[in-house]
Image (cartoon, rainbow over all chains, first blue to last red; front, side, top):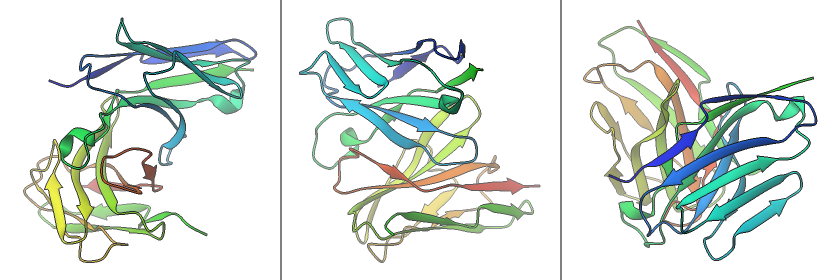
Length: 116
Length: 113
């Protein structure tokens, strides 16, 4: 069964610290790995995404690290701020045009709290 | 101002009643999706539509129905057959079939008592 396993379920970080959220996948055909950020009562918003031909992608304070051999990818939030407090979801999909295979498979989420 | 709108934000129904959740997008996206979100469960796909007049079941379609008569609209009906309908429902769209770069609406919180 296609799965994306996300950890930890919850994370508390001090302001200015580094938040790290990890995801592991099983299907080696996955080739697109996005991260979504969701604030309470809102819909998720695409934060950053990576494809397996690169090992790292950085956008501002957010970095995705990708380890193809280990089938793992992680989100690093540098200089974490209270405004980053949200639930983060990783996801994966494969590049099959149409059909169900192209749909996103989501992890179960990590609730991040950044303490001032 | 492009985006996805879902209405209403909060919805209350009595058990045994069908209820329809609205989802509209003006992004000119071909594909649209409905997800259900429960605490600690992540996002689970209910139905998706890759093109007008076509839709497919997702992982948890039982007790739900959809239609896609217009490109902009993808309403979800929660029927009385859905055994545990209380949840946060999210609609999303993507520019093309395949699910990449999905954009989500603000969600509808449905409570059935």
